[in-house]
Image (cartoon, rainbow, N blue to C red):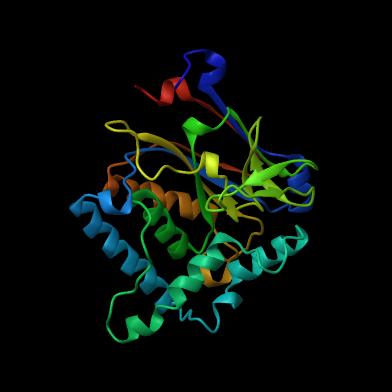
Length: 280
């Protein structure tokens, strides 16, 4: 990392007690990933073919589950996060990331019926990959650039006076309320409304630095749980399955997993020794 001091080499990620008080079934799983991020136009041909196949598999998973533009909002994970967003007083125009992924994918179902390929868009090799996993596992996911954040990350409620500048917001400051769940480090809010939007200053880069990999924290969230985890349609997400699936696929874009963990009310914190995990 940027500093060799032991303090800066340790990364702590935790869920605050007040989150479990409000959402006792909260589960956060994450992976630290080393990967060369490539923007849409810079993705190597071999990765383009892999990602194209993965996108069609993700779209087919939506199709097989009979999710379409008329019913995607009734999928259990969307209903679960709607309840959470209502409790955060987020407003009717704010939804979990999985809602927007399902809305786009479900709009492609007619193409699949006609034997055509679904168009799920493209951002970068890494973002495209985890968006596909998010769709397949019906679980919201998000990612942060390790180099751009402090060494203490907490899922907590917002504090009055805090502000947030989101990715794609053109520098607009959003006020953070104390009813709203955020990921934050010691200096700033990193995500707003749990997994609605990543901060512009901490987002995954479009391209890794020339000749150097990026180190990315990939998160998967669920705020409720279900006894039946075998059927994705009837569970409010599965954070463990989402991170496990991403870990299995990441080598296909030249990445590797350095660390994974899950946080819940019994294990609310994880500490990573970055000095041992990252060898430069």
